[in-house]
Image (cartoon, rainbow, N blue to C red; front, top):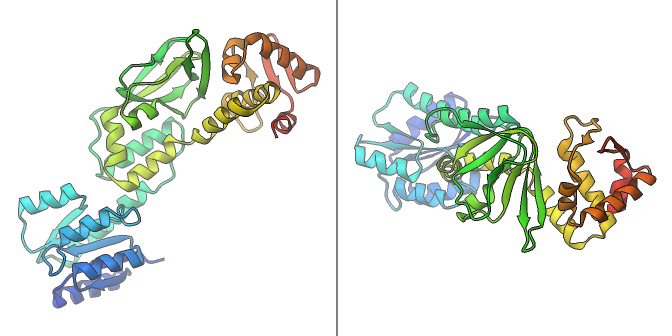
Length: 353
């Protein structure tokens, strides 16, 4: 399918010339004679790119860009300004508002085509589905930098090793980084007044840790700790905010990477609030089993301390052990040298449902 472009240009001769150039290049063109009609046309057609003159009657190019940027349906559409003068103040104003490029009149046909092609190509890069592992996040950061959308902090992201039971952050700390699990496993938990822990999430390779506090711009309300030796990528909070705030398409791609375990966490908390002990233990086993899997058919041995599993379930260790013993008798699980193997996931799921 041909890429769709909206051209907003009040000069008839210039407008017709650009339409002819772009149609010959294979683009689907929709043209508007002023800014007001241009905004209506963009909203009606949702194009792949907008080319817009700055000086126009009724609504100038800045007004067009402002109105489009306020609409979630049009805010991420690439936007190229046409201008009859190369005034640095005008260019700076446009770029600060979110324009992607400037083309000064008069221009050569190839200059216009190259600018459009480059911008469309960079936008396609940012629509890519990225894997959730270390390669995916590195690829995402690299593509965002190359697409020219964000000037990320210089240098590679810092990698830091954490020993088993080492704290990653504590309740009340000010967040300075977004943590990404490169290898190993970690947990986040709340601590009640009696000093008892309640695990709220278990993180494995490909998960992000600590984004809630960054999103809300508050100190941590929970704690995070390494469950085993692990390696984390530290993404400075300035980069985190840049990824979210600079461009809607970047934010959309980043949020997909960021939030793939949010539904799982919400379900776990609902389970904790409303289910019986047997259901909670079954759900906790399934949750931890999924976190420990490395392949779809893998039956991992859950090498998790009973205290940690009890914290996932939200019960006393003694109560957990009694329920595990029942599950073992029912051949739902097996216990080998202190490690749990889930034998029948389907029956555990039926227990929950």
